[in-house]
Length: 144
Image (cartoon, rainbow, N blue to C red; front, side):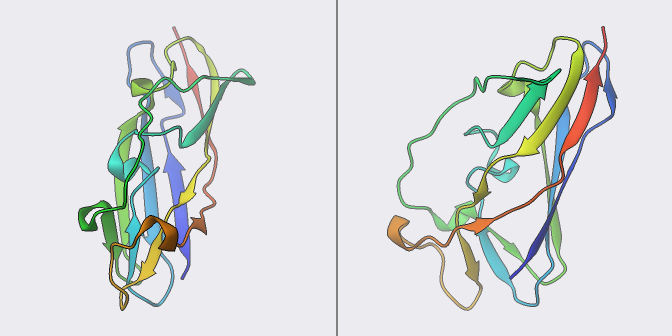
């Protein structure tokens, strides 16, 4: 199983413009897979899944932190071979990206569980199969 992850955001954001990031996940493998949406934009912002800097200084995460039980079936995305899914989030909902400056955003999590579709989701916490996910970094400039 293999994936392509792409991040995109406008290069320049005006003072009041939302910092809307687009996260695209593509199944580049040959099997149907189920992907647990934890710590991805597909579940919204419920953990510090991105490392964000402003002018080279880390921007603190200020969003919610969840304590989790076992995953539920509805928390899995199904991706067919070649299929891509997108999610959009406003980074300003959990990070202070309002001040002017040059920002860099990097995905800092992994896919908590990936299941080849022949197996059944969900699984128990002890059976999760984490998969590293490498995404491109994106930058934007916030102007006054």
